Length: 328
Image 1 (cartoon, helix red, strand yellow):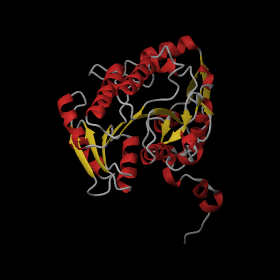
Image 2 (cartoon, helix red, strand yellow; image 1 turned 45 degrees about the vertical axis):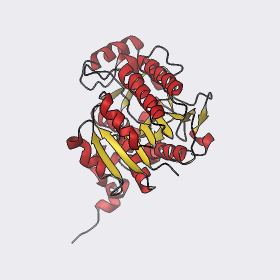
Image 3 (tube, helix red, strand yellow; image 1 turned 135 degrees about the vertical axis):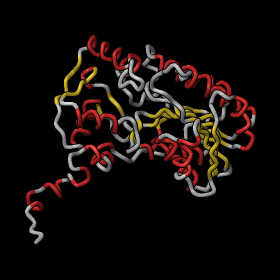
C-alpha cells in the first residue's frame, strides 16, 4: 500500500479503536482528531503500535484547524455519526451532511488518495426519518465533491464496547418485561466491529473507490431474535411484549427528554424498516471481505458482566457436580 498517512475523525469510539489497531499493525501512520485529548488521548494512544500515532485536539467545526491536518495526509476516514440530536450543535445536518461535505472538499483540495465515509444501512427506505435524510444528503454531497470516495453502509455494529448489545443486556438484566416495537419483526444483519474494520482496511489496500458498499454480518436476525440471543447469553428469562404503536410513540416522546435517550421519535421511525442488504449496491462479501463473526458466538465472550456470578456463572461452575467437590 503506497498511502501511509491516515487522518481519522471519530477515532475514540468502538470502530475507531479497532481500526487504529488494524492500521498501525499494518505500518500505517494515523493522526486521530479528538475533542478532548485529556479525556480520550491516553485510551486512543494505547490502541496503536508505538510511534505510529499522533493525536490532535480539535473541534470538528474549527475549519481552519481541520484544514491544516490535510496537508500531510494521504487518506481521510470519517467515523463520526450520531443517533440523536442535542442543543450543542450536534444536529443531524451538521454531523451527517455539513461536516463530511467539508472533509470531501478538503480531500479534493489537498489531492488525497482516498476518502472513506461511514454511513448507515437502510437509508433509502426510511424517507420519514431525519437521521436517514441527513445521511443521504451527506452521501450525495460527498460524492459530488470528491470522486475518490468509498461510502460504507454498515448494519448495526456490535462488540464488547458498543452501545447496542451492552445497553440491551443492561436493560434485560434489570427489567422483568421488555417492549418489542413493531412486534420485534424488524430485520437486522449485525456486523462485528472487527469485521467492519477488516472491510475498511481491505478497501484501502485494494484501492476500492467511487462506490457505495453495504456492510453486513453473516446472518439475518429479527429484533426479537437478537433480544433472545442476549437473554440466553446472560442466562435470563424475560417477558417480551409487543407494544402498540400509539404507546410506542408516547414512550419515545418521554425517553427523548433524557440527556442520553433510550429511544427517540426519529429512531422509532427507523425501526419500521429492515436493516438488511438492499441489493442496489455491492456488499462487503461481493468485494472480497465477507463477515465471519456471529452475534451469538461473540456476545458470549463478554456477556458474563451481566450474568449473576459474573465470569464464574457458566455451567462449568454452576453444576452440582462441581459444587460438591471436597476441598479438605
